[in-house]
Image (tube, helix red, strand yellow):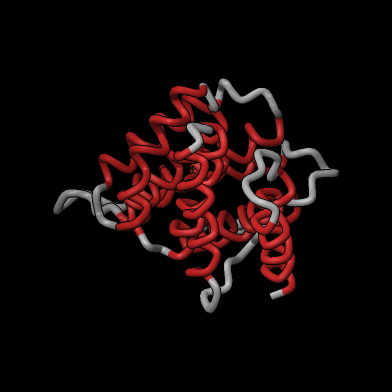
Length: 222
């Protein structure tokens, strides 16, 4: 609640003075959020949508990309895959035009998650692979590691939700899942110790990896 109160305060200040290009503080608050409170998500989305409309009217593609990506991020966190897919093409086009590889790679994370949750596993794998390839263009090391760990985690979840052909053992699927979770964990370990999100990224990946290892009967490693 405190986080959203800060967000509303920042937004009202900026919006009351009219359109501003420099909304870095606003977006820093949004992107630092670990969870979005569902009691307020529609207000948050409306604010981002209003920013997008105004930026689009002014042909400010950079601001339009930031606002639409933020909206997609919120919908992805809420599990609203319809609204992710409804906006994703426009956002990807904007990111490609601006060569904003960080947001472009992140958008393919959201796309992959939506396809995965809707049961389109091949499309999900393709999206995560594209996102991984694009992440190599990101020069900020911590951002690179965070993007890669999200894509590796997404691919691992594909193996969790996929069923092998009838008569084939499931063990290779679980081993593949462990392999990608180990890659995600390795990326989390490479995040700078001073990064404010490192403990969360590392702790979450360690917990997931440990649980899967134990379920696969690798007790010592788990």
